[in-house]
Amino acid sequence: GNSVTQMEGPVTLSEEAFLTINCTYTATGYPSLFWYVQYPGEGLQLLLKATKADDKGSNKGFEATYRKETTSFHLEKGSVQVSDSAVYFCALRRGYGNDMRFGAGTRLTVKP
Amino acid sequence: ETGVTQSPTHLIKTRGQQVTLRCSSQSGHNTVSWYQQALGQGPQFIFQYYREEENGRGNFPPRFSGLQFPNYSSELNVNALELDDSALYLCAITGMNTEAFFGQGTRLTVV
Image (cartoon, rainbow over all chains, first blue to last red; front, side, top):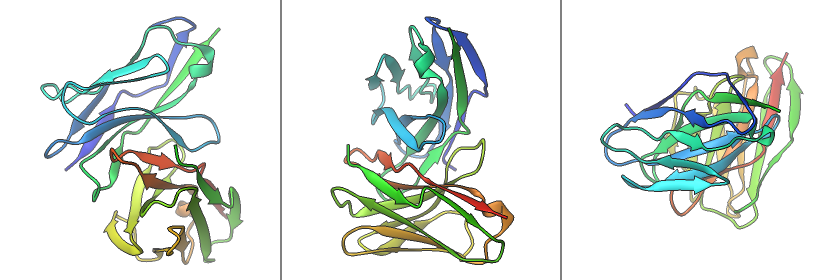
């Protein structure tokens, strides 16, 4: 079936450190891929997306590249800030008529 | 982005009761989905509505039901509440590139 696996947390980094959160997927066809962020007590916010192979999604210094050959969509940021502390979810969707599948989430804590 | 509003934000119910959660969007999208997010987990798909008809359902029992109205607002109804139904319930509309835009959620606690 269609599923997403992301690295388990929690992840704790110092401010200005480099961030990588791994995400791999299993899907039939060509899904769209997403990263969402959830701050405490809030819903999910779309962080970035990629709709086809080799696309790079980017937003607020975060990047992820859709790698079909490795079925991966790893999230990266060159220099994290305390305000990036949140839970990050990788997700996929195979099309409009299909549901969105999420990973279990990775909690990131950035310390000053 | 289109604002998605859910109500109420928090709710406490007793086991066996029924609950109705509501969702609306500023611009009126014809596809709305509901998700359940248990503590420490990713969201799980409950069902999706398109033009007032259910057109997809996850692994949830029939006591989870929904409605979509002509103005594209939506309701999630849960009957015979169980303790395990305690979770954050998220409503989402679908964007042009199949992305989902979520509301802030309703935190349901069943005691």
